Length: 314
Ligand SMILES: Cc1ncc(C[n+]2csc(CCOP(=O)(O)OP(=O)(O)O)c2C)c(N)n1
Ligand SMILES: [Mg+2]
Picture (cartoon, rainbow, N blue to C red):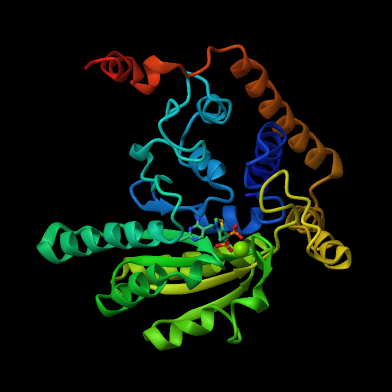
């Protein structure tokens, strides 16, 4: 899990340096990795747009092809047809095809509905879906519709709110009045839990318990992983709307620092940790260097040639 978290930090930092519109996931790695590590290959993962590349990697995607998407190269899985943080559907990851927040909650719930039908139809299907979404997204109607139906129909799905305390420039208190987002679970008649989203083991434990419950046919769970967006909304956002002390406070709780000290406490040496971190950095640097040499996506990959022929037609 530490390796995935480090890889997530390195890869996402490289993406943020490359694209001013990248959504940086710095500080949210424990929530991202803890939520999606350990699922079965045939389970469905529907990650939030902040940090999905590592989820693709965990499920077997090739680093160079993901980097190719970010750089707009021909080797990318999406070949310029979709946003860079999508990937191959065959890995059972719900791709980001809409910029409309909340739609992935409905698509993920639809996947869980299909697993439910198969189970009832005697096909012994015990697959589950895990979907993560932002705290701002939790205020969309899609959230209510998806969770309500999942609860009524006891669908095999786990809802994980990746609560980073901001929706672009708005702080959490300006759009959530209740004690927590997880507290809403009571209204749907399902279990709701708040976990420390910067503690990878706590997140993983909570999600795995909910996955076991969903797999046993007992229905959905709402988990709120409380974390913090250390960078801006986009890479180019300086986030000057929030107090520097607040950011500093959360920097001290950086999930990577915490995972490192947990590993040190069980006897892993600083050298071993540093070498793992160096390897991850090099892996990402080398991938970017290799992929930069490849041709850019052009009209042929985008399927524009035919359309161009038609433009001049009377
Ligand atoms: C339906 C809809 N409303 C607004 C937006 C614009 N928008 C894009 S990202 C974002 C913030 C979402 O915040 P949150 O769900 O907390 O995710 P985070 O960016 O914090 O990870 C907003 C409002 C959108 N894409 N879709
Ligand atoms: Mg947020």
